[in-house]
Image 1 (cartoon, rainbow, N blue to C red):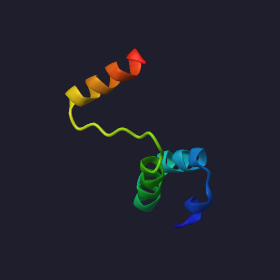
Image 2: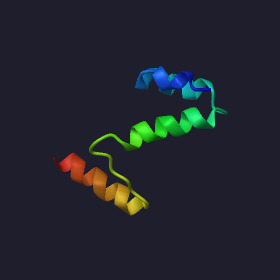
Image 3: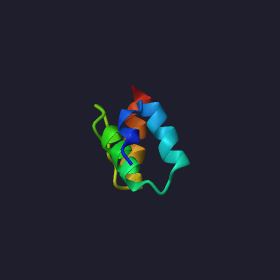
Image 4: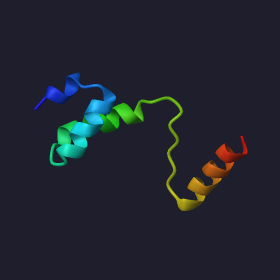
Length: 58
């Protein structure tokens, strides 16, 4: 199904929530989220804590 390709980000999020078995739509949504500027990836709870402290201090 490729109907999700024409949805806005908010509509796509709702679609993915309503259709959890649609792996292609989910992967498309993830690609949109990953492409956003300013995205921070953390791998450990310590990295998350450090990032939160940094953002709260700003």
